[in-house]
Image 1: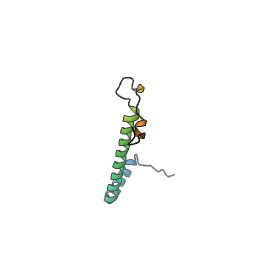
Image 2: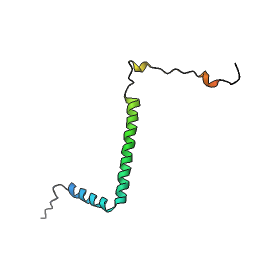
Image 3: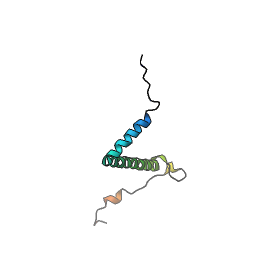
Image 4: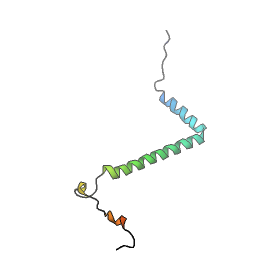
Length: 82
């Protein structure tokens, strides 16, 4: 009867191997890190915009009662007529 014993925690071995492979290919490592940084920055930017526009309410009392008023006729003026 053969008893196979697994290492207690194979994660450190995998991390060492991954770091060793990343150090062997600095171009790929730089590209991967730049891509991750760009994606994280884009995600944070989108979250900040959504948080500011949608999630947080306006800093006015009864801000849900605010309305927008505009003049639609101002864009249809014909120049030269009184």
